[in-house]
Image (tube, rainbow, N blue to C red; front, side, top):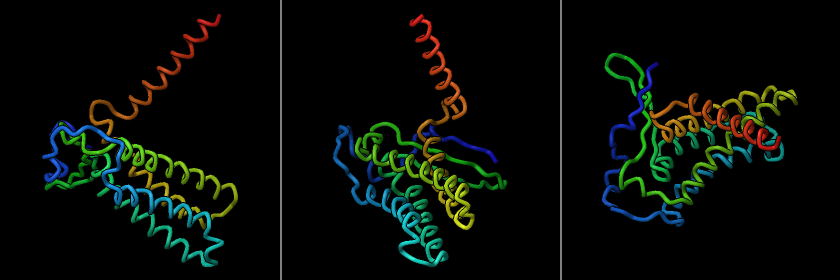
Length: 201
């Protein structure tokens, strides 16, 4: 599978929004419906998972409800809220030769200023916190021997983790890859700690 980062191309994510000029970033939420649905499906899926034994005695009904909510969340975040709230999008396309290309895009220039700081915080907070919760649920299902729930929590982790990975790739771009970024971060942390210990002694 071949990956293609198209951050070098100035791609218009929304043609109608290109004429905004130089607006300053405000803390006002410009897309309240998108912000609501960015959190609604994922938070509801978590709540249904946590309260499923109280809400219904049927495992199948709870499982189907959670998977539908997770699927709606995946589609909404990937196709709508990422574009509106932070100006990022990603997808996979297959060319004429049958090769698969992953495309990661971000807004450039004046169009980059379309989102607000509040929307960006809501987007990234929701995008990061929920996959962490599903990781906790995976370990919880394993250690409490709730094997029937394991497929559901793995589905939640995969769908929300895929969106997180895609948007982190959009944000980082092709300037560096995630492995190098993580290596550099941990290297800097190690160096800071070593220098702090030398100063103490």
